[in-house]
Image (cartoon, helix red, strand yellow):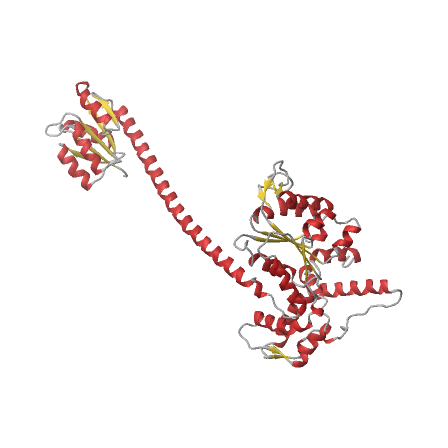
Length: 475
Protein backbone atom coordinates (compact mmCIF):
# COMPACT_ATOMS: atom_id res chain seq x y z
CA UNK A 1 0.00 0.00 0.00
CA UNK A 2 2.87 2.32 0.61
CA UNK A 3 3.90 3.74 3.98
CA UNK A 4 3.88 1.84 7.26
CA UNK A 5 1.85 3.20 10.19
CA UNK A 6 2.35 1.96 13.79
CA UNK A 7 -0.34 2.35 16.48
CA UNK A 8 0.59 1.76 20.12
CA UNK A 9 -2.16 1.64 22.79
CA UNK A 10 -2.92 -0.70 25.68
CA UNK A 11 -6.64 -0.77 24.88
CA UNK A 12 -7.74 -3.26 22.21
CA UNK A 13 -10.85 -1.29 21.21
CA UNK A 14 -8.80 1.81 20.47
CA UNK A 15 -6.28 -0.18 18.46
CA UNK A 16 -9.05 -1.68 16.35
CA UNK A 17 -10.76 1.66 15.81
CA UNK A 18 -7.54 3.30 14.67
CA UNK A 19 -6.64 0.35 12.46
CA UNK A 20 -9.99 0.63 10.66
CA UNK A 21 -9.46 4.39 10.26
CA UNK A 22 -6.14 4.04 8.42
CA UNK A 23 -6.01 0.58 6.84
CA UNK A 24 -7.16 1.86 3.44
CA UNK A 25 -4.18 4.20 3.18
CA UNK A 26 -1.36 2.51 5.12
CA UNK A 27 0.12 -0.81 6.04
CA UNK A 28 -1.05 -0.71 9.65
CA UNK A 29 0.81 -2.40 12.55
CA UNK A 30 -0.47 -2.40 16.14
CA UNK A 31 1.17 -2.95 19.52
CA UNK A 32 -0.27 -3.21 23.09
CA UNK A 33 2.81 -1.73 24.79
CA UNK A 34 5.80 0.50 24.20
CA UNK A 35 8.23 -2.43 24.28
CA UNK A 36 6.19 -4.31 21.67
CA UNK A 37 6.04 -1.18 19.51
CA UNK A 38 9.83 -0.74 19.60
CA UNK A 39 10.27 -4.34 18.51
CA UNK A 40 7.91 -3.80 15.57
CA UNK A 41 9.80 -0.71 14.50
CA UNK A 42 12.98 -2.74 14.16
CA UNK A 43 11.24 -5.03 11.67
CA UNK A 44 8.80 -2.57 10.05
CA UNK A 45 10.12 1.00 10.12
CA UNK A 46 7.12 3.28 10.06
CA UNK A 47 6.52 6.70 8.58
CA UNK A 48 3.79 7.53 11.09
CA UNK A 49 3.62 6.49 14.77
CA UNK A 50 0.50 7.10 16.87
CA UNK A 51 0.86 6.40 20.59
CA UNK A 52 -1.31 6.89 23.66
CA UNK A 53 0.32 8.82 26.48
CA UNK A 54 -1.14 6.78 29.34
CA UNK A 55 0.17 3.23 29.07
CA UNK A 56 1.48 0.87 31.80
CA UNK A 57 5.20 0.18 32.04
CA UNK A 58 6.18 2.80 29.40
CA UNK A 59 4.37 6.07 28.87
CA UNK A 60 3.77 7.48 25.41
CA UNK A 61 6.33 10.27 25.66
CA UNK A 62 9.05 7.82 26.77
CA UNK A 63 8.11 5.41 23.98
CA UNK A 64 8.20 8.14 21.33
CA UNK A 65 11.57 9.35 22.59
CA UNK A 66 13.00 5.83 22.17
CA UNK A 67 11.22 5.36 18.82
CA UNK A 68 13.00 8.45 17.61
CA UNK A 69 16.31 6.61 17.97
CA UNK A 70 15.06 3.87 15.62
CA UNK A 71 13.18 5.97 13.05
CA UNK A 72 14.35 9.56 13.59
CA UNK A 73 12.35 10.99 10.67
CA UNK A 74 9.02 9.35 11.48
CA UNK A 75 5.98 11.53 12.15
CA UNK A 76 5.19 10.99 15.85
CA UNK A 77 1.65 11.74 17.11
CA UNK A 78 0.57 11.52 20.76
CA UNK A 79 -2.99 10.87 21.94
CA UNK A 80 -3.33 12.67 25.24
CA UNK A 81 -5.75 14.01 27.82
CA UNK A 82 -5.60 17.45 29.39
CA UNK A 83 -4.29 15.93 32.61
CA UNK A 84 -1.11 14.90 30.73
CA UNK A 85 -0.07 18.53 30.23
CA UNK A 86 3.37 18.26 31.84
CA UNK A 87 4.37 15.20 29.77
CA UNK A 88 2.98 16.86 26.66
CA UNK A 89 5.03 20.06 27.15
CA UNK A 90 8.16 18.01 27.82
CA UNK A 91 7.63 15.90 24.70
CA UNK A 92 7.08 18.96 22.52
CA UNK A 93 10.13 20.77 23.90
CA UNK A 94 12.37 17.75 23.46
CA UNK A 95 11.14 17.18 19.92
CA UNK A 96 9.66 13.77 20.60
CA UNK A 97 6.35 14.49 18.91
CA UNK A 98 5.18 16.10 15.66
CA UNK A 99 1.58 16.63 16.80
CA UNK A 100 -0.60 15.92 19.82
CA UNK A 101 -4.31 15.09 19.57
CA UNK A 102 -6.54 15.60 22.56
CA UNK A 103 -8.96 12.93 23.66
CA UNK A 104 -11.57 12.27 22.63
CA UNK A 105 -10.53 12.77 18.98
CA UNK A 106 -12.54 12.98 15.80
CA UNK A 107 -11.46 10.41 13.16
CA UNK A 108 -11.44 12.99 10.35
CA UNK A 109 -9.37 15.40 12.44
CA UNK A 110 -6.85 12.64 13.18
CA UNK A 111 -6.76 11.63 9.51
CA UNK A 112 -6.03 15.26 8.60
CA UNK A 113 -3.14 15.43 11.08
CA UNK A 114 -1.71 12.18 9.69
CA UNK A 115 -2.11 13.35 6.09
CA UNK A 116 -0.27 16.61 6.77
CA UNK A 117 2.43 14.72 8.64
CA UNK A 118 2.97 12.36 5.70
CA UNK A 119 3.15 15.30 3.30
CA UNK A 120 5.76 16.89 5.54
CA UNK A 121 7.67 13.60 5.68
CA UNK A 122 7.61 13.20 1.88
CA UNK A 123 8.65 16.81 1.32
CA UNK A 124 11.53 16.39 3.74
CA UNK A 125 12.54 13.15 2.02
CA UNK A 126 12.40 14.83 -1.40
CA UNK A 127 14.47 17.77 -0.17
CA UNK A 128 17.00 15.38 1.29
CA UNK A 129 17.10 13.41 -1.97
CA UNK A 130 17.66 16.61 -3.92
CA UNK A 131 20.30 17.76 -1.49
CA UNK A 132 22.12 14.45 -1.88
CA UNK A 133 21.82 14.82 -5.65
CA UNK A 134 23.22 18.35 -5.47
CA UNK A 135 26.11 17.12 -3.32
CA UNK A 136 26.76 14.33 -5.83
CA UNK A 137 26.61 16.71 -8.79
CA UNK A 138 28.84 19.20 -7.00
CA UNK A 139 31.32 16.42 -6.43
CA UNK A 140 31.21 15.47 -10.10
CA UNK A 141 31.55 19.13 -11.13
CA UNK A 142 34.53 19.55 -8.84
CA UNK A 143 36.14 16.43 -10.32
CA UNK A 144 35.40 17.75 -13.81
CA UNK A 145 36.80 21.17 -12.87
CA UNK A 146 39.99 19.63 -11.55
CA UNK A 147 40.28 17.45 -14.64
CA UNK A 148 39.67 20.44 -16.90
CA UNK A 149 42.25 22.45 -15.00
CA UNK A 150 44.76 19.64 -15.43
CA UNK A 151 43.93 19.45 -19.13
CA UNK A 152 44.32 23.22 -19.46
CA UNK A 153 47.73 23.01 -17.83
CA UNK A 154 48.68 20.23 -20.22
CA UNK A 155 47.35 22.19 -23.20
CA UNK A 156 49.30 25.25 -22.13
CA UNK A 157 52.41 23.12 -21.82
CA UNK A 158 51.80 21.67 -25.29
CA UNK A 159 51.20 25.14 -26.70
CA UNK A 160 54.33 26.44 -25.04
CA UNK A 161 56.31 23.53 -26.46
CA UNK A 162 54.88 24.08 -29.95
CA UNK A 163 55.49 27.81 -29.97
CA UNK A 164 58.64 28.14 -27.90
CA UNK A 165 61.33 30.47 -29.19
CA UNK A 166 63.47 27.70 -30.65
CA UNK A 167 60.46 26.35 -32.55
CA UNK A 168 60.89 28.89 -35.34
CA UNK A 169 62.43 27.30 -38.40
CA UNK A 170 65.28 28.85 -40.37
CA UNK A 171 68.97 29.61 -40.07
CA UNK A 172 69.24 32.32 -42.72
CA UNK A 173 70.69 35.72 -41.78
CA UNK A 174 67.23 37.24 -42.28
CA UNK A 175 65.72 34.88 -39.71
CA UNK A 176 68.64 35.28 -37.33
CA UNK A 177 67.83 38.99 -37.26
CA UNK A 178 64.21 38.14 -36.41
CA UNK A 179 65.36 35.85 -33.58
CA UNK A 180 67.59 38.56 -32.15
CA UNK A 181 64.80 41.14 -32.09
CA UNK A 182 62.25 38.69 -30.69
CA UNK A 183 64.51 37.65 -27.84
CA UNK A 184 64.82 41.25 -26.70
CA UNK A 185 61.10 41.74 -26.02
CA UNK A 186 59.98 38.32 -24.71
CA UNK A 187 59.65 39.42 -21.09
CA UNK A 188 58.47 42.96 -21.66
CA UNK A 189 54.95 44.29 -22.21
CA UNK A 190 55.70 46.64 -25.10
CA UNK A 191 53.37 46.54 -28.10
CA UNK A 192 54.88 44.73 -31.06
CA UNK A 193 54.17 45.35 -34.75
CA UNK A 194 54.86 42.42 -37.06
CA UNK A 195 55.15 43.33 -40.71
CA UNK A 196 55.89 41.40 -43.85
CA UNK A 197 54.06 39.83 -46.80
CA UNK A 198 51.13 37.47 -46.32
CA UNK A 199 52.13 33.94 -45.41
CA UNK A 200 55.47 34.75 -43.77
CA UNK A 201 54.39 33.44 -40.36
CA UNK A 202 53.36 36.53 -38.44
CA UNK A 203 50.81 34.69 -36.29
CA UNK A 204 53.39 31.98 -35.54
CA UNK A 205 55.84 34.62 -34.34
CA UNK A 206 53.10 36.26 -32.24
CA UNK A 207 52.55 32.91 -30.50
CA UNK A 208 56.28 32.55 -29.93
CA UNK A 209 56.36 35.99 -28.30
CA UNK A 210 53.47 35.05 -26.01
CA UNK A 211 54.36 31.47 -25.11
CA UNK A 212 58.04 32.25 -24.52
CA UNK A 213 57.39 35.30 -22.35
CA UNK A 214 56.16 35.93 -18.83
CA UNK A 215 52.49 35.86 -19.92
CA UNK A 216 52.77 32.30 -21.23
CA UNK A 217 50.42 30.86 -18.58
CA UNK A 218 47.61 33.24 -19.56
CA UNK A 219 45.37 33.34 -22.62
CA UNK A 220 46.49 34.02 -26.18
CA UNK A 221 43.68 35.10 -28.50
CA UNK A 222 43.93 36.07 -32.16
CA UNK A 223 41.59 38.04 -34.40
CA UNK A 224 41.92 38.79 -38.09
CA UNK A 225 40.67 42.36 -38.33
CA UNK A 226 40.01 41.98 -42.04
CA UNK A 227 37.83 38.90 -41.67
CA UNK A 228 34.78 40.64 -40.15
CA UNK A 229 32.71 43.74 -40.92
CA UNK A 230 33.39 46.61 -38.53
CA UNK A 231 30.21 46.11 -36.45
CA UNK A 232 30.90 42.43 -35.83
CA UNK A 233 34.58 43.09 -35.17
CA UNK A 234 33.64 45.63 -32.47
CA UNK A 235 31.45 43.07 -30.69
CA UNK A 236 34.09 40.36 -31.08
CA UNK A 237 36.86 42.44 -29.57
CA UNK A 238 34.98 44.39 -26.90
CA UNK A 239 31.96 42.20 -26.14
CA UNK A 240 28.36 43.31 -25.94
CA UNK A 241 25.39 43.68 -23.63
CA UNK A 242 22.27 41.58 -24.07
CA UNK A 243 19.81 43.29 -26.40
CA UNK A 244 22.33 45.86 -27.67
CA UNK A 245 21.70 44.71 -31.25
CA UNK A 246 19.75 42.07 -33.14
CA UNK A 247 21.13 38.68 -32.19
CA UNK A 248 22.66 39.81 -28.88
CA UNK A 249 20.79 37.22 -26.84
CA UNK A 250 23.05 37.36 -23.78
CA UNK A 251 25.85 39.37 -22.22
CA UNK A 252 29.13 38.35 -23.79
CA UNK A 253 32.73 39.35 -23.01
CA UNK A 254 35.00 40.28 -25.88
CA UNK A 255 38.45 38.98 -26.72
CA UNK A 256 40.18 41.71 -24.73
CA UNK A 257 38.40 40.56 -21.56
CA UNK A 258 39.02 36.92 -22.41
CA UNK A 259 42.73 37.63 -22.78
CA UNK A 260 43.04 39.67 -19.57
CA UNK A 261 46.64 39.29 -18.30
CA UNK A 262 47.49 37.56 -21.59
CA UNK A 263 48.08 38.57 -25.20
CA UNK A 264 45.79 39.77 -28.01
CA UNK A 265 47.06 39.28 -31.57
CA UNK A 266 45.43 41.64 -34.07
CA UNK A 267 46.18 40.45 -37.58
CA UNK A 268 45.61 42.70 -40.60
CA UNK A 269 45.37 45.74 -38.33
CA UNK A 270 45.51 47.96 -41.41
CA UNK A 271 42.02 46.80 -42.41
CA UNK A 272 40.33 48.52 -39.43
CA UNK A 273 38.00 51.49 -39.83
CA UNK A 274 38.71 54.92 -38.27
CA UNK A 275 36.01 54.27 -35.64
CA UNK A 276 37.61 50.97 -34.64
CA UNK A 277 41.04 52.62 -34.53
CA UNK A 278 39.72 55.10 -31.94
CA UNK A 279 38.50 52.25 -29.72
CA UNK A 280 41.79 50.36 -30.05
CA UNK A 281 43.70 53.50 -29.12
CA UNK A 282 41.73 53.73 -25.85
CA UNK A 283 42.70 50.17 -24.95
CA UNK A 284 46.37 50.91 -25.54
CA UNK A 285 46.32 54.29 -23.76
CA UNK A 286 44.03 53.63 -20.81
CA UNK A 287 43.81 49.85 -20.56
CA UNK A 288 40.02 50.15 -20.68
CA UNK A 289 37.30 48.68 -22.89
CA UNK A 290 33.56 49.23 -23.08
CA UNK A 291 31.16 46.55 -24.24
CA UNK A 292 28.74 47.42 -27.01
CA UNK A 293 25.54 48.72 -25.41
CA UNK A 294 27.11 49.50 -22.01
CA UNK A 295 28.09 52.80 -20.39
CA UNK A 296 30.69 51.48 -17.95
CA UNK A 297 34.38 50.93 -18.66
CA UNK A 298 36.21 47.73 -17.74
CA UNK A 299 39.90 47.49 -16.97
CA UNK A 300 41.98 44.98 -18.91
CA UNK A 301 45.64 44.12 -18.78
CA UNK A 302 46.70 42.79 -22.16
CA UNK A 303 49.74 42.83 -24.36
CA UNK A 304 48.92 43.72 -27.94
CA UNK A 305 50.81 42.21 -30.86
CA UNK A 306 49.61 43.57 -34.21
CA UNK A 307 50.43 42.48 -37.74
CA UNK A 308 49.97 43.85 -41.23
CA UNK A 309 51.17 43.30 -44.77
CA UNK A 310 50.47 46.95 -45.60
CA UNK A 311 52.81 49.92 -45.41
CA UNK A 312 51.17 51.58 -42.42
CA UNK A 313 53.35 54.68 -42.68
CA UNK A 314 51.96 55.25 -46.14
CA UNK A 315 48.46 54.59 -44.79
CA UNK A 316 49.05 57.24 -42.10
CA UNK A 317 50.24 59.75 -44.71
CA UNK A 318 47.17 58.98 -46.83
CA UNK A 319 44.91 59.62 -43.82
CA UNK A 320 43.57 56.07 -43.70
CA UNK A 321 45.27 55.08 -40.44
CA UNK A 322 45.54 57.14 -37.25
CA UNK A 323 49.05 58.35 -36.57
CA UNK A 324 48.64 58.16 -32.77
CA UNK A 325 47.49 54.53 -33.00
CA UNK A 326 50.35 53.70 -35.35
CA UNK A 327 52.92 54.96 -32.85
CA UNK A 328 51.19 53.09 -30.00
CA UNK A 329 51.33 49.83 -31.96
CA UNK A 330 54.70 50.32 -33.59
CA UNK A 331 56.71 50.54 -30.37
CA UNK A 332 58.79 47.55 -31.40
CA UNK A 333 58.55 46.62 -35.08
CA UNK A 334 59.74 43.26 -36.40
CA UNK A 335 59.67 42.56 -40.13
CA UNK A 336 59.45 38.98 -41.29
CA UNK A 337 61.30 38.32 -44.56
CA UNK A 338 59.70 36.91 -47.70
CA UNK A 339 60.57 33.30 -48.39
CA UNK A 340 62.37 34.31 -51.59
CA UNK A 341 64.74 36.34 -49.38
CA UNK A 342 65.59 33.32 -47.22
CA UNK A 343 66.03 30.63 -49.87
CA UNK A 344 68.51 28.71 -47.70
CA UNK A 345 65.64 27.96 -45.28
CA UNK A 346 63.45 26.24 -47.89
CA UNK A 347 64.98 22.74 -47.43
CA UNK A 348 64.55 23.03 -43.63
CA UNK A 349 60.94 24.20 -43.96
CA UNK A 350 60.09 21.52 -46.53
CA UNK A 351 61.57 18.82 -44.29
CA UNK A 352 59.60 20.20 -41.35
CA UNK A 353 56.29 20.10 -43.23
CA UNK A 354 57.02 16.58 -44.50
CA UNK A 355 57.46 15.55 -40.88
CA UNK A 356 54.21 17.25 -39.90
CA UNK A 357 52.04 15.72 -42.64
CA UNK A 358 53.81 12.36 -43.00
CA UNK A 359 55.12 11.67 -39.47
CA UNK A 360 55.34 7.90 -39.94
CA UNK A 361 57.30 7.97 -43.19
CA UNK A 362 60.89 8.81 -44.18
CA UNK A 363 59.75 10.72 -47.26
CA UNK A 364 61.85 13.47 -48.89
CA UNK A 365 62.09 15.49 -52.08
CA UNK A 366 64.43 14.50 -54.88
CA UNK A 367 67.37 16.77 -55.70
CA UNK A 368 65.65 18.08 -58.84
CA UNK A 369 62.41 18.73 -57.00
CA UNK A 370 64.23 20.55 -54.20
CA UNK A 371 66.09 22.63 -56.77
CA UNK A 372 62.76 23.73 -58.25
CA UNK A 373 61.41 24.53 -54.78
CA UNK A 374 64.42 26.75 -54.13
CA UNK A 375 64.17 28.53 -57.50
CA UNK A 376 60.48 29.37 -57.17
CA UNK A 377 59.57 32.90 -55.98
CA UNK A 378 56.88 31.80 -53.47
CA UNK A 379 54.46 34.74 -53.64
CA UNK A 380 52.42 33.04 -50.91
CA UNK A 381 55.59 32.57 -48.81
CA UNK A 382 55.79 29.90 -46.09
CA UNK A 383 52.05 29.22 -46.22
CA UNK A 384 52.25 28.47 -49.93
CA UNK A 385 55.24 26.16 -49.34
CA UNK A 386 53.26 24.29 -46.68
CA UNK A 387 50.38 23.84 -49.14
CA UNK A 388 52.82 22.68 -51.83
CA UNK A 389 54.26 20.02 -49.52
CA UNK A 390 50.76 18.75 -48.67
CA UNK A 391 49.90 18.59 -52.36
CA UNK A 392 53.11 16.74 -53.23
CA UNK A 393 52.41 14.12 -50.57
CA UNK A 394 48.92 13.55 -51.98
CA UNK A 395 50.18 13.34 -55.57
CA UNK A 396 53.11 11.11 -54.63
CA UNK A 397 51.03 8.62 -52.68
CA UNK A 398 53.21 6.10 -50.87
CA UNK A 399 56.50 6.87 -52.65
CA UNK A 400 59.39 7.84 -50.41
CA UNK A 401 61.08 10.26 -52.82
CA UNK A 402 58.92 13.05 -54.18
CA UNK A 403 60.00 13.99 -57.67
CA UNK A 404 59.41 16.94 -59.95
CA UNK A 405 56.17 15.38 -61.20
CA UNK A 406 54.62 15.82 -57.72
CA UNK A 407 55.07 19.60 -57.83
CA UNK A 408 52.44 22.03 -59.02
CA UNK A 409 52.56 23.70 -62.43
CA UNK A 410 53.35 27.02 -60.76
CA UNK A 411 56.47 25.67 -59.06
CA UNK A 412 57.55 23.87 -62.25
CA UNK A 413 57.22 27.17 -64.09
CA UNK A 414 54.45 25.99 -66.39
CA UNK A 415 51.38 28.04 -67.26
CA UNK A 416 48.20 25.96 -66.78
CA UNK A 417 46.60 25.00 -70.07
CA UNK A 418 43.29 26.61 -69.11
CA UNK A 419 44.81 30.06 -68.57
CA UNK A 420 43.95 32.30 -71.47
CA UNK A 421 44.56 35.95 -70.73
CA UNK A 422 44.53 38.65 -73.35
CA UNK A 423 47.58 40.91 -73.09
CA UNK A 424 46.16 43.56 -75.37
CA UNK A 425 45.96 47.05 -73.92
CA UNK A 426 48.13 48.53 -71.21
CA UNK A 427 49.87 46.72 -68.34
CA UNK A 428 47.21 47.75 -65.82
CA UNK A 429 44.45 46.06 -67.81
CA UNK A 430 46.60 42.96 -68.34
CA UNK A 431 47.23 42.76 -64.58
CA UNK A 432 43.49 43.16 -64.00
CA UNK A 433 42.69 40.25 -66.32
CA UNK A 434 45.42 38.02 -64.87
CA UNK A 435 44.27 38.56 -61.28
CA UNK A 436 40.65 37.99 -62.21
CA UNK A 437 41.57 34.78 -64.03
CA UNK A 438 43.66 33.48 -61.11
CA UNK A 439 40.82 34.09 -58.66
CA UNK A 440 38.26 32.43 -60.91
CA UNK A 441 40.49 29.35 -61.35
CA UNK A 442 41.25 29.11 -57.63
CA UNK A 443 37.54 29.17 -56.84
CA UNK A 444 36.94 26.51 -59.49
CA UNK A 445 39.73 24.26 -58.17
CA UNK A 446 38.39 24.53 -54.63
CA UNK A 447 34.74 24.11 -55.67
CA UNK A 448 33.75 27.59 -54.57
CA UNK A 449 35.31 27.32 -51.09
CA UNK A 450 36.50 30.88 -50.52
CA UNK A 451 38.59 30.06 -47.45
CA UNK A 452 40.62 27.41 -49.30
CA UNK A 453 40.88 29.56 -52.43
CA UNK A 454 42.14 32.54 -50.41
CA UNK A 455 44.74 30.34 -48.69
CA UNK A 456 45.97 29.04 -52.05
CA UNK A 457 46.20 32.58 -53.43
CA UNK A 458 48.05 33.83 -50.34
CA UNK A 459 45.47 36.45 -49.40
CA UNK A 460 42.90 36.82 -46.62
CA UNK A 461 39.38 35.52 -47.08
CA UNK A 462 37.98 39.02 -46.61
CA UNK A 463 40.44 40.32 -49.22
CA UNK A 464 39.25 37.61 -51.60
CA UNK A 465 35.61 38.55 -51.01
CA UNK A 466 36.40 42.17 -51.86
CA UNK A 467 38.18 41.17 -55.06
CA UNK A 468 35.30 38.88 -56.08
CA UNK A 469 32.95 41.82 -55.70
CA UNK A 470 35.37 44.13 -57.49
CA UNK A 471 35.72 41.85 -60.52
CA UNK A 472 32.11 40.66 -60.52
CA UNK A 473 33.21 37.01 -60.50
CA UNK A 474 30.33 34.56 -60.48
CA UNK A 475 27.69 37.24 -61.00
